[in-house]
Image (cartoon, rainbow, N blue to C red; front, side, top):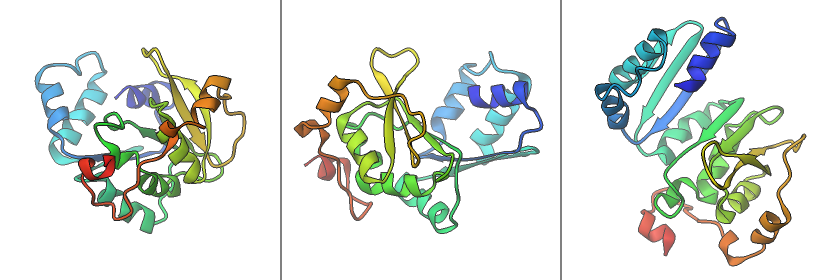
Length: 196
């Protein structure tokens, strides 16, 4: 929502296509019902309502498609279409609670959807297992401020141009057992199986 607000304020004619992967849209519906979207502009509130109820918004120059279901399956058509994102916000629940969306296997699919020349992936996670999985997916990583959090986030891209460097402590953390990435080669394993 904040990104939509910024786009409408800064460059209202900017062409924007959003592909959002969500397990369901109940969170969006509850946020709207609880008036948690009231601080956004009426245009953004209208788009959020449409997304929550119809899973899409076609309001040129903005097109949004909410893909409901297991993200491991929902991303596969995007990979097959060679869909490319300039920005990916990776925001699933924490790795111990949702390891299926932090596995090397899933992140390889995510990396395939990232523009290889100028695309940037941003996540709040600084977990060593996540960072090593991003590296195994062919991405260079850097450390970034994760708003409102004590720990840094991670920024990743195919071409390592001007990425904020990892600290010596973060580099050392990537050499520990904590950096062993999650694996889910079938992209169907349960969280419990992945953690085991």
